[in-house]
Length: 428
Image (cartoon, rainbow, N blue to C red; front, side, top):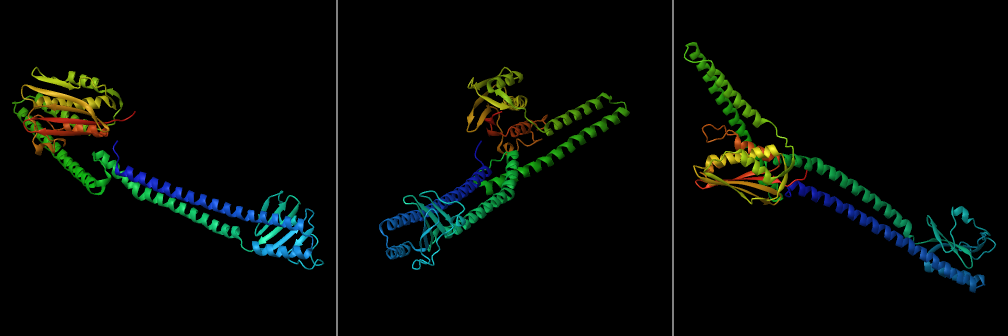
């Protein structure tokens, strides 16, 4: 089917929400990668310090020289604390009191500071403290940094996650708001437009679409008025006729059979009205267009002076539709074409495709239709025929709307008419 405004707006809203989620996901991914890089940077700093400390311990034995080098190391790497101990928790160097060996604690409980000790070459962090285990020789390097990137970024990262969560919640509420306040009314309008046969396009949704819906509703209201007036007129005539016949029966001038005949006429009219008012629920099956048209043509008395041409003769087109309803629609159009032809004439039945529709056109070279009549030709009870009640073409229109299709008229006075049925290409 053709693209409609509600469908386009729905697609745009979905794409908008997906884009927001995509941007939020990318933002979260970049933040995680940035955090991982900071962690990697700090870990590399600790490993580099461990390598330098290993060199100091291997090449310098003088305590004063090592203390001086360790102080330079702390300034270079911006350290607050630096403690080096062996694997038995014996302290080798403690920056808190490097010049007073007697006051330096002999041991440090790393297990109490960290629940799990690192493996060789591994760096672990707890809060602001880092612990690194050098492999050869084995010693623990415990330190706290004066410039802490990770804890600071962790707070920023937490706020970032909070921001993304709030944004997603906002988008969710926005989506619910749009659905409740825009899409649901739009679906109602779209359904109403579909029932009225109005096509909704994005470029004219506000102006033309609502104007067409208004015009259709106004015409429907006028049709109901005409419907009521027609019923009142016909029933008044029939009741008047029955009363007149009854009086003549009293005088012996009429028989009771004429009352029965008039009642049968009323009953026939009521049956036509009930048939037209009955809701249509198409029972769709796969139909071969060629076979359908062949069956309908056989049922219509054409006469010797009217020729029927099927173009193309065999099309091979099949559709999903209600066979009985669609055949009734084509029968009505063929009967009108036959009645429009005076004596000799030609009727063409063309089959084809138009965008998302299968088309069946009934073309005659009859008397044609006046432009002022063509406007109301599909209105119930509008008829130029003396014996007609004006439900034939209205019923055709109703059948096509039940199939989500439409019927169109092209006519010129004195040159003939072309009625085209547009049937959507649908699956079962």
